[in-house]
Image 1 (tube, rainbow, N blue to C red):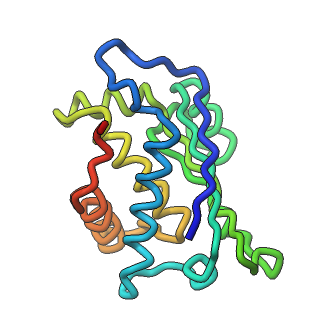
Image 2 (image 1 turned 180 degrees about the vertical axis):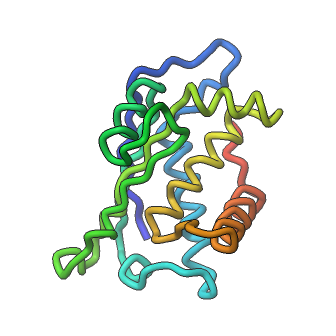
Length: 172
């Protein structure tokens, strides 16, 4: 499986204490490929068949600020204020047009400002928080959701597995 990643940065700036590759496209491409391969390698995990069979997947990843994500949150979820991550899954509207070797998963949008606050509140690095949020968004793109406590617990447990599987995304 090959992954085509479109990474954007809108209204964000790294702080001097941030790792230089925190928003690096190559690092995120490697991280996402690793997670996807891990998910595809475990037949017990829910994943759309057309995604498992795809030769190429594509997705967008955008890091933005609170103002931009608040606008998206208002437009698409009718909720006021910023949020940490939004996912726009292309598979939600998949029809016959999506069958084939290349599949568009959709877009993940992360507020760097909210992620930074949450990392400080949780007492862990911004890098870990960003990986947590992007993995959450990825699972949503693959059809995972958390409408109740049991599904939320299952999704959060899978995120922990993905983050704790030996790949840290740390600079080499």
